[in-house]
Amino acid sequence: MVTIRTRRQQAARPGPSGQTAERTVAAPGRPGPRSRRLGFADPVCTINLVTTIESGSPSPQVRQVLGAYLDASLLTDGLQTELWREARLTLPQLAVLRSLRDGGPQTAGRLGETVGLSPASATRLFDRLEERGLIRRHRGHDDRRCVEIHLTARGRQLVGAVRALRNSPLRRAVEAMSEAEQRSLATALRRLADQARRLKRLSPRVALP
Image (cartoon, rainbow, N blue to C red; front, top):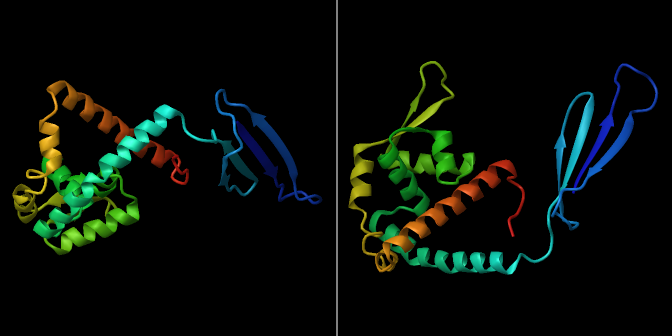
């Protein structure tokens, strides 16, 4: 259900501050009272958009998927420990370096989105990598606001030397799966990551169940 409330303010006319109108649109298959409010400011008209999202417990299928994801995410604890011991890198930092190695130079905004980081978090991460000489920033000649991230030779060498993933139980577990299972898992994980990032961009303040 979507509720749209508008309050119109006519600055050029004396009298009441404005008129209030309300319109409710029911979205199919979306019952429940849980909602999120977005404000859109305008000098003449202020619109408050209230989006009602399905409330209550997720379906058994969704709970099963979330449980499996949480179980799998626990495997990254040991991987992160080994990665930090070996190269003083976090998993997001390694993801940035690998993305630059495989995809070449990228804008800061695109690279941050690729690894699922907010602009502020991405900036801090780039600062740390640049301080270590693993990446370098290039600003555009025509638009200085456009920042492109490049992988340095030192960064490329470090990514190639990292063995945390190669020697991990996670890699051995994947290798023990059939090729069909590996393809299915890779497709499902990429779709999950892409979908979560898309929803985060559209509704950054909505908490996923």
